[in-house]
Length: 322
Image (tube, rainbow, N blue to C red; front, side, top):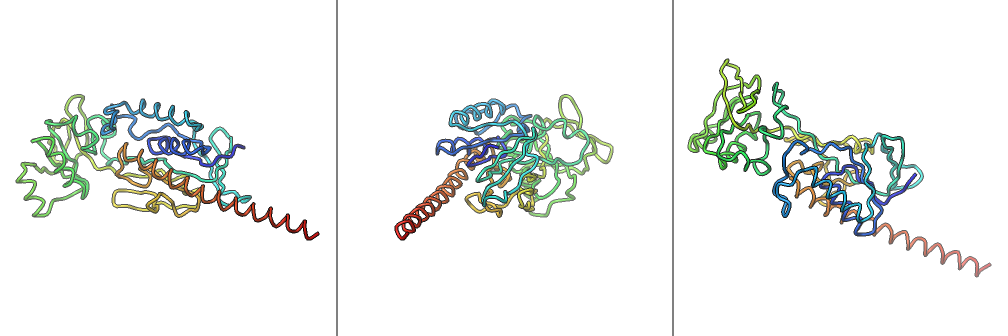
């Protein structure tokens, strides 16, 4: 069994940035990654300063190399069991899919989120290409095109306004949302955003997306904006005694501002605690949380040194008395 200062579960931007930061502070680190990045289907990662449009796989490969350069151990696999150890406080045992087990003084959860799309046949097939959710991540690529917005909840109005900045032709399709209030409708009308009834029964098409509507008609758009539910991967956190928190946009791990969770010794960074974080925000969060985590370990190390010194002095005093 190998013992580390920090076990990072999840090797996306947050986890790898944390590994680099901790490695640069001479911490022993292992990163355990299941190989399911959220943006795997995207052609490029955007708003990444100095790396604009870089392929997601290339970004992660570079991040892994940088983390390894500072001594981090990168393991491709999953955590099948996680538990606090009885032998020592603030020590955790993680069993991996290959049967091996490691222990760590701290665990950093950076497992990211899963996008739960509306239940519409054909929708999933276009995720990451013509099916969009974030105008900042992929809106530029749809600029000037015919853009549809699938209205499934309160985010529909927000998305309609943001995508209208990118195109003069935006259509909102009422799906799980029935209508807009008077003020919203006035804004939509003033901006020339059309609203048509749904629901959308199916999405297809090899060129433009063809939306088959409930009244038997269809509508073609070049890109379709949706509002998924963002579900944090919380399995390891729950095994360690934590509980996921609900959010209007989905599910997340609640932390203090530094990334410390309700489970002593367990921290979280990136999308798993901030559902709206983009690639660079997640990486920055990994750096910030790692700094707080390292400070926590420094404080524990100092307390341990004091305790050992007092014990040593007590033993010397006892020897002199004898």
